[in-house]
Image (cartoon, rainbow, N blue to C red; front, side, top):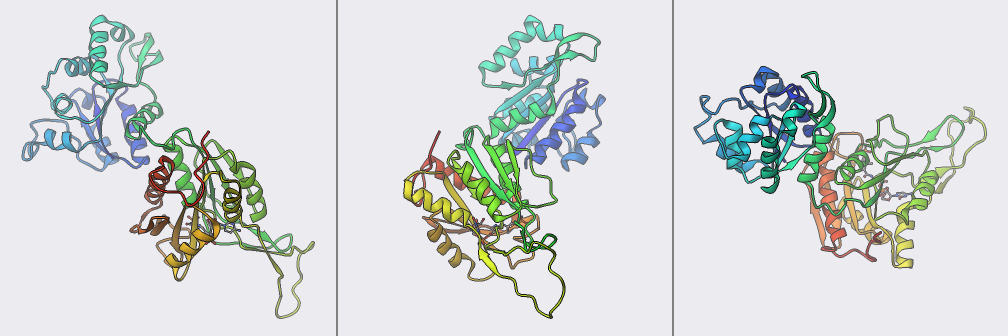
Length: 408
Ligand code: PMT
């Protein structure tokens, strides 16, 4: 999404740099629009370096009027966020005064408007400012309340710019207001499993956890309560409601099955071992030229969830992955049917730019309605595409393979 970040002349302008960075981390593009007085607090170069876009500081700068910039931006942005917003800009917006780029942009755009005021507490309480705020609220603008505390002017009171995290969360709420995932309990598995064959050796795979982590982070951004069951990986998991670390397929099976009935959605992105070796009690000594390991099938977590749902007629929406090196989509279609899941993500793991331990992925999403191939893109974007389809499943606009997901 494209966000115009209006920055006005207050001491909190430095926090707007953090806001811009945070919005980008959530996958948004940011174009910074600074008033003249904002540039007295923070240099435009700082915003330019962070947003990697020219910063708009002057309505009449050369080149600004070739395609009537404020109209061009007004019609392309998804959100106008002003942080910090001074009493001056609030007064101008409330009264339709358009005498600089930011106030002109406000009158020209039909995008939602989010305002984070920051000013001296007496100013914030002043009847004129209150009236202007009421006018903007009545017109549909949303606000991030200023915090209480020590103000730059030396006073203690309400008026300090809200913290960047609060501003970013408020922006996210506006940009993704109606996600059917909001408040839903979503379980995501990520990473590999390690199957020990003696006290020091194991059979594992190259899963890094990146795909599962991207799904967990994106589901959390959409307001889901995420439980992340993660196999051994060096990477830091995203901050979600619950992170459970496991090692083996059996441990992952236990962690998933004990939680699944409380979930609305289960997404199995983990690369779970299909076989586990018999474990020797002591380190296997080097001896003969060959070593034979006896492998036993591991519990099929996704298969068990699918069969349990089929038998009971109720259970969470089930999303699986199919990691294949040949006949990728055909095998994914077979797995979807065999494991009784709603949606399966076919992943060609023979590619070097997709699948295991890279930041990008190219997948085909298989549902009851057919197969849809997505181009190579970041795992964050792939996660977004998968969750868009999960949202449709939850809304009931796509038929689930068997039972409907349990709600509540
Ligand atoms: O972690 P990354 O480095 O980002 O890599 C991402 C990934 C390649 C691991 C991921 O995109 C992926 O494809 N995950 C599924 C890997 C896998 O185990 O595929 P499978 O085709 O063997 O299994 C099919 C499905 O059954 C999977 O959803 C799997 O989680 C599940 N399964 C498999 C075995 C088992 N015993 N229990 C299961 O639940």
